[in-house]
Image (cartoon, rainbow, N blue to C red):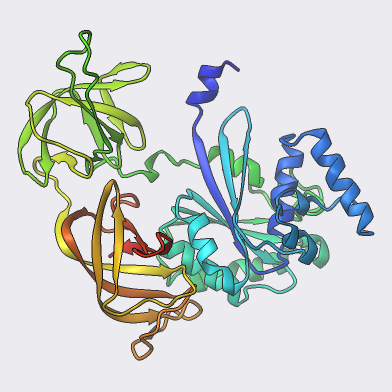
Length: 421
C-alpha cells in the first residue's frame, strides 16, 4: 500500500462502553492482537506482566490500560486511545471507563465516535451501567450501536442466553433515539467472533466484530446537506507570487461546497461566490465534511476567525440564548448565574448560566426539576445567554455546529461540554 492510499483510507472512530469487568479492554486487546496490530515486544511485555501477577494466559486488557493505577486495580479510569489499521480502514478506538464517577470521561471519548460498542456480560444480562451507557450514546447521537454480548464461553455458548439479552435490550432501547443497533455474541478472552468466526456458535450467522467495523457505512454520518464552514484562519501570504491572495481556511463542518456556489457570510450577511477551493495538494472542484480546505471568494469581504460561510437559503440559527444538554466535568459545581467562556466551532465568547431547567437521571431518563446543584459527572438541561450571537444547529442535525464547551475564566480549565437542543 502506498502512502497516498493509506492517507486516503476512510477513518472510523469507535468507543467502548459497558459495566466494570464486562471485558472492554480485553476486547480491544483481542482486536489488536488478532488483527496483528501490535508489535512483538508489546505482546512480550504484557505476557511478562501477566505471569508476574500469576494470571493464566496473557491478559490482553493490559494493552490498553496504560495508567499505573488502572493496572493495579484492573480497571479503566481515563479514556485510552489506540490506533490501528487493516487493508480496508483506519481506526481510532476510545476505551472509556465503566464506573459511574467517570461519566464525563465517557462523554469525552464518545463525542466523536461513529460506532459505540456496548458490552454486556452474558451471565449478568442488561444491567444499570448498560442502560446508562446506551443513554449517553443516544444523547451523543452516535450513529451506530453494536451490542457485544461478551463472555459467551461462561454460559456454554448457549443461543437462548444470547437471544434473551438481545430481546431485553431491544425492548428497552426502542425508547431511545438510536438509529442503527446490531448484536454480536462473542468471547473476547477466547477470540470468538472478534476477528475470526466462532466454531463454538454455529447458530450465529452474522458477521464478526472486525468485519462489521470494516464494512459499516459511515459516509452519511456527516451532514452533507447544510453547508457550514467556520473560518479558522485568514491566509494572506504578502509576497509577490500571491500578491492578492486572500483565503479563508478551516474545516468543513457540514454540506458540500462547490466552486461557483453562491454563499453568505455570517454575521455580516454579505453574499459572494466561491472562486476557488485550495488544499495543500492543489485545487479542488468541491469539498465536503470533514475536509480541511481554504476557500477563496470573488468579492473582497471583511471576514475573520469565528465567522461562518453558509448557503444563502440554508442558514443556522443565529441567537444569543441557547438551550443545551450539558455534561459537567469539574469538581466545582456549576454556578447558577455564573459567567464562563464558551467555545463554539471557531468562535469564542463569554456566557452566563441563565437558567438550570432540570437535571437528568442518567439511569432512568427521569427529569429532576428540584435539584439545582449540577456537580461533576451530572448531565443537565440549561439555558445560556452569550455576549455575541452563535451560528448554531441542533446537535442532532450537526454534531460540530451543535456542540459547545465551557471554560472557567479564572483557571482556564474546561468545566463542561454541551449539546445544543
